[in-house]
Image 1 (cartoon, rainbow, N blue to C red):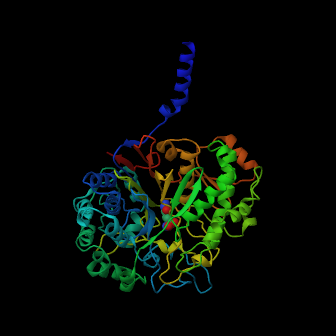
Image 2: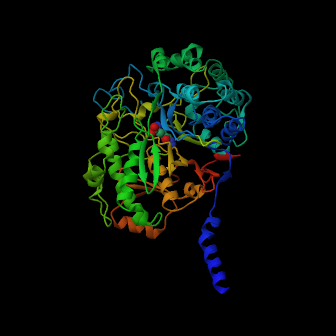
Length: 561
Ligand code: DON
């Protein structure tokens, strides 16, 4: 009898951690996790109406363009990584391209120096938008519901208005002056009262008209006709070079995924022109080679080892990665196990490697800007992982004059000059030099994880160069540390990227012993208020779904049914 009680107690203790786990939103049939509650609601409604994950993704993408103007967009671009219910994986590249009259040195002065802000602000910063083409292509090949049903919710939101969340009101307030400087007033994003607050309504009739054209004419509604005329006029009047030919010729591209195995799981992520897939594959292969899972979560040893892996991986990124349609990316070499074994063989646990020894370069700041990610799973098990961006907050800050939407500043993702860092402190070389029609290298890493050949997790985040390391840590938190999706998203993060030669850590999140131990090994530490803004879905052992939006760091929402 006693033995019986003892074994029951032991069983209870062994399953207690499961009960003790803090979880996100749990549902059985479908889950939508996005950066904005209204966009998540739009996606959930589409799933409930019988749309699949791809229908919901299209509807959410357009809804974000209305309710999340800092990053949601119709004039940006991005990547989709998908997995169908039948187990097929792939990706869609709707990344922006350089205009056809772009040139390698377009951001340099006559002395060959980078002209400050030219690739970041105003018309010359704008790459050829890919979003509408990408969403139309996705819907044409994988959607179920009528196109109009997916766009109508966004037309309504722009026409009738939506309420600002606190985070959105605060963010818009920071950019009031520059938006006014670039676009004049009145303007839907400039508060008539001088300052936005939570609950204020934004109505954007011009955007409603643009979305109506897209609803009624599909791809042509944006790349041809009045909307295209207005876009080209706005850009050319403001000194930009984007033309009708650029819009006509833009084409999104179906690609495969870069896949890596890690401790019985397979991680599928985005191939070039994203650096995410290759970098994540290198990081997971290195993590397995170096037995990272033996170390405690966020312990000094784990942080040190991951930093040393990241240092080498980001050095490869800077040198070897670019648009594969323009540059012969040595993908096979970068993923080769022998190459990686050698690459990581000089890592020591007691001392950091000096980044300058790996390859010289100059350093710059790492700034947290905005992009947005959405993760969706439907009742059949189709999964969509999309990261999309205007690049900086509110992109180039320039709006299409009649169209009511903001234009991207993604040209800054190119390497304007070899060795000179961009806004994320990333340096690049020939592989990512500007050329007409070329796609700029990205860090966006929408990813899908499988276990035993089945869907396990959908994951992604904004964060510029920190995207890759945030996705890496979130996946490790689940696989190595047994966290729930909620806990994995909440967990404190750190980031390093070869140059600058520092570890950026979320402030007030790590003990002084941890910080001291890292400093003793030679690491320089910097602190950031937050890293990542994840939106993820996990398939739990009983088949239910756990959605988690990064609500501790901002105000997104995961909704399921
Ligand atoms: O494609 C890239 O890597 C960048 N344009 C992403 C920018 C970004 O994530 C900004 N957000 N926080």
